[in-house]
Length: 88
Image 1 (cartoon, rainbow, N blue to C red):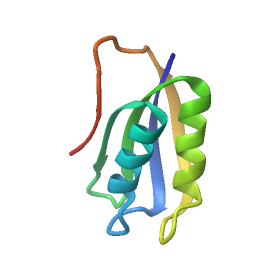
Image 2: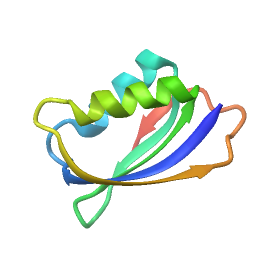
Image 3: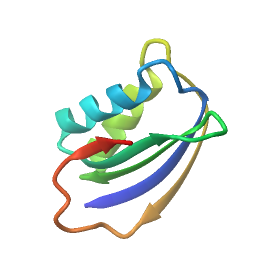
Image 4: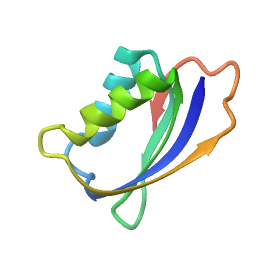
């Protein structure tokens, strides 16, 4: 089980990014959250099996209308008891 905090830059607001992230996380059994930031970026914390997290990230980068130009990622300590993926 891994947890990552990722900041996405590019065309990531106003294109369904958070909805798609929530859908993909649910599809692959991941938990966490996602929110828009004032500077036009989107911040996400995602937790799950390493392969599942990788699938979510690949699908997001290949999403229609979404154009990720840069990602900043760091590992976090996994949390216990988290059950869903929410958007803020």
